[in-house]
Amino acid sequence: MAKGLPMFDTTKSIAKKANPDDDKAENVQLFKNNAWRSQISVIGIEGLPSNLSAAGNAIYKGIKFRCSMRIPPHLKNEKICEILKEKITAPGDETFGA
Image (cartoon, rainbow, N blue to C red; front, side, top):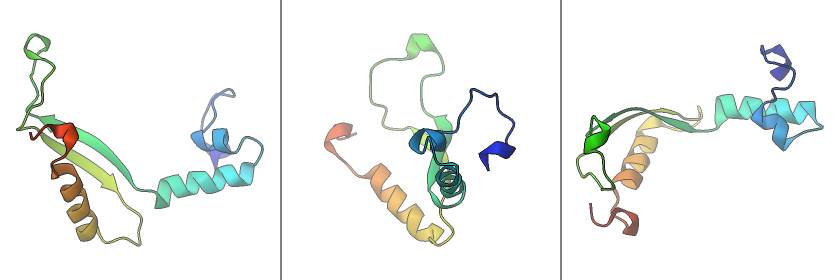
């Protein structure tokens, strides 16, 4: 799998670091990363200061995020969305009640 990708000779996949001497194990890790492991990316944020002079070390209560999440094919997206929303919006010590 990794051999078919255009890379410099010195560039290695993250899966290669975990499996330095085993090409088959590297390919299995690459497949799992691309097809089965959940991944989340923040693709937009609203509510942060728009310039550096207004930025500060503060917790902003009204921040909105737009995320893109890839989930394994055997999981139902409704259940994942429910769990994710619960985890993100749950009050905790690290949010100081915000």
